[in-house]
Amino acid sequence: MSTHEKKPFNRHALGLALGILIVVGGGTAALAFVAVSSKTVSIDQSRVEAPVVDLSPTQSGTLRALNVSAGQLVPPNTVVAQVGVELIKSTEGGLVLSTTGGVGDTVGAGQPVVEMIDPNALRIVGQVDENKGLSKIKIGDPVTFTVDAFGSATFVGTVDEVSPTSNQSGVVFNISSQRAVQQFDVKARFDTTLYPQFKNGMSARMTVYVQ
Image 1 (spheres, one colour):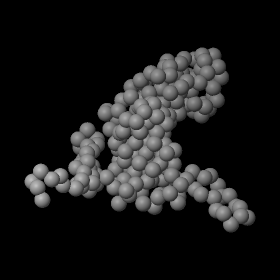
Image 2: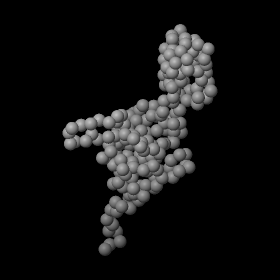
Image 3: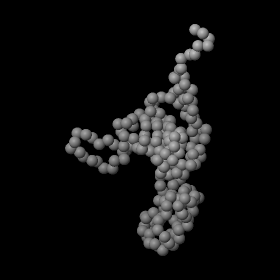
């Protein structure tokens, strides 16, 4: 064989070369894709979201002051509203998603006046059918994902929660032999400091790399 003859293209070697590619958590946790594996679970129904914190009075009263507006970043322990004589404070710092009502309105006990999220708690949350690879997904599995608002750009994360219960509330009985397929939440964390452009509620697609 001539020294100039080309060697066969080695896809496996390319996979290994591409595999060492992810650093998550600001360099604190390294995830290596040993190869571009066919062992993946795709979750098309995904969103960027964080738990919503409702701030509400313990007693009914008149909304006397509303000190924040949607889109505002609020430090911890900030008075965001006053209902009657009760001061409503932010429990943790976060982003105001929405406010309810206006000054002078009557607010019921437990009725949210301000809704907030902690931007650092944003996750990719996907819904996966129980028969579409749910049993293969484990905490710590590497994840890549796209966010519709940013086209084909690919981002990285890590599975940090698999819901222990389905999204189906209650028990549905069906005389048909065809059982209803249940969906479960899979949550993946990512370094929010690397992706400050993400907003709560954005649509996404997630791929989980399983063992």
